[in-house]
Picture: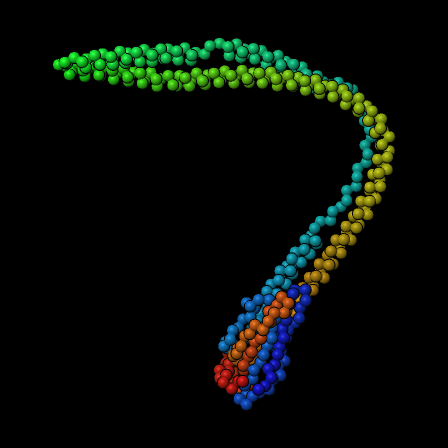
Length: 366
C-alpha cells in the first residue's frame, strides 16, 4: 500500500498567519491500477469551513476548505483599523486657548440694599392681607350652613309621613275585623297606604343627597378656613425670610469689604500664575501632537500587518480531480479542529480530462 501524502494547512488566530500554497507539491506512488490516495490534514475554526463530504466528487483546483471565519475576523479588524486611521486623520487639531489677562479690580459699589428692603415691605403687606382674609373666613365658618335648614325640613316631613303610614295601617287593621266589608273599601285603603309609603320613599331619597351636600359644604368651609390659616403662616415665614435676607446682605457687604483688600494683594500673584500656565499649555500642545502622530503610525503598522495576513490566507484546493474518500475529525489542537481528508484520484490519461471528471472505481484502493 502506498504511503498517503499529507498537506498541513493551519487556520490560526488573526495575529499569526501560516500561508498554504493553493497547489501544494504532492509526492505519491502509483498503485498497480494507477490510482493514488492523497491525505490532507487541515485545521479549521468550525466545521462549516470544510466544504466537502465523504463520497463527493471534486474537480481539480476545487476549493475544499475555506477559512472564512478567520478571513471575516481579519476583514472586520481591517475595517476597524481603517476607520480609526480615517478618524484620526480627519480629527481637528485642538489648539490650546491661552488664558486671558487678569482684569483690573473695580471699586466697590455703594451699599443700598434696595432689593432686600423692597422684599421686606412686600412681605409685610402680604401678611396683613392674609390676616384680613383669615378673619373673614372665621366669620363665615361660624355661621350656620343653609343646608342644615333644608335637612331639618326634610326630616320633619319624613317623621310626618311615617306617622301617617302608622295611622293608615291601624285603620286597615280595624277594617279587617268588620264582617261583610265591601272589598272596594279595603282596596281603597290599601292603595292609600301604598301612596303614603311611596311618598316616604321619595322623602328619604331626597334626604340622602341633602345630607351629602351638607357634608360637602362643611368640608369646603373647613378647607377654606385651613387654607386661609396656611396663607397667614406662609406670609409670616416669608416676612421672616425677607428680614433674614436683609441682615445677610449687610453681613455680606462687610465681608466683601474685607475680601477686597486681600484681592488687591492677590492680583499681582495671579498675573504671574497665568504666565506660567501659558507656558504649560504650549508644552502640552506639543505633547498632544506627538501622541497623535505616534497613534497614527501604530494604526498604519497594524493595518499593514492585517493586510499581509489576509493576503497570505488562501483557501485550500485539491490538486487533482477525484473522489473524497474520507472526512475525519482527527482531534483538536488548541482552539482549532483537526480534520483528515482523503482524496482518491487516478493518474494518467483520465487525469488530463475535464476537472469535473473524477475517478469512480475505488475498489483498487487499499
